[in-house]
Length: 403
Image (tube, rainbow, N blue to C red; front, side, top):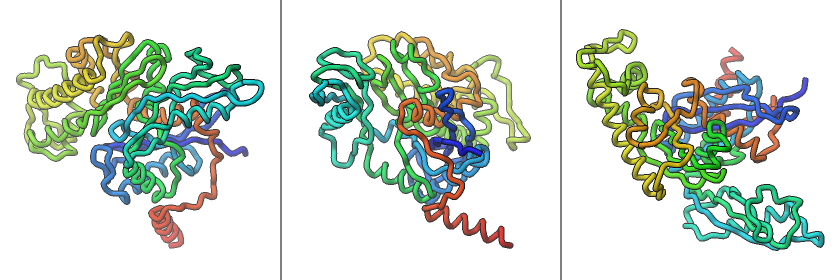
């Protein structure tokens, strides 16, 4: 039986650590998702790693579930990066086309991308990726695949992604301690947008808002590429904390209430109360109070989002409008409220609320495949775990199997 050639994505989020495994289908030139799983996050605060052991444990747990579903073993990951940890720099580079035939070769593309990397950045940051927006050959712009074209001078306009070295090392340490490798970092908006924004939307201009648990990411695409990205340090977890504080209930119950009863359609709620035996509410909760708290925090988040959009120098909404994803967007009436604040067309970036949980993590493997970041690797049924935590966990497994 032929081994499967696979790619795995890892999304380390504030509320959950998610793993998605894809199998490369070269015959149909596509990536098929064959396994996915998530586990509640530990050791994180707003996407910041504060406990390496706990995060590594989450990675192991989520990977184990995904591997069982896929029937394969993972060696390493394409890891998502939150916008809050990166600096995006737009730069250009130019080189002379080598060779007597003056045809652009892969080596020329590598050289011009390296030339674009030459930019002054703070010592605590490192450029981890160079993403070309367009190439130019002898001042002819709009070239996307320069290899094989004739000319004298090759230029590139590129987006550089600079990451804090400490953040990078912490992520790598977590992944390696769990027993895996980091193959490549991918910016979350690039991954999330891959499956939910069309080429036409990215070409004419569109904004993607990702309302995460710990942060809200604002991304703008135009001319087919990511132009700007920013992050607001508020998310769904603040709504949950507000509910817990106001209603004087534990965080877990507050989250359950938000998901089960949260609504932004404010009609006929004056005399309604909530008393749910499954959520174990000890006393009736006013439906109006619950949704007043949710709307108050969303008001703050939307105002910060508007501030970021103003910082991006928008004079009018982009032609393709705004798309929204994230857990809080499932609250009834969210899109209508967003349109009131943003005063433009707002659409959900997904059709099935279940699928939205894995938008970014599935996007990681699709983005890696479609952008030739890897040729994949064959499943390894004899993987030897390098990480210390993996070795300890496997030792316990072996011990119980012997008994």
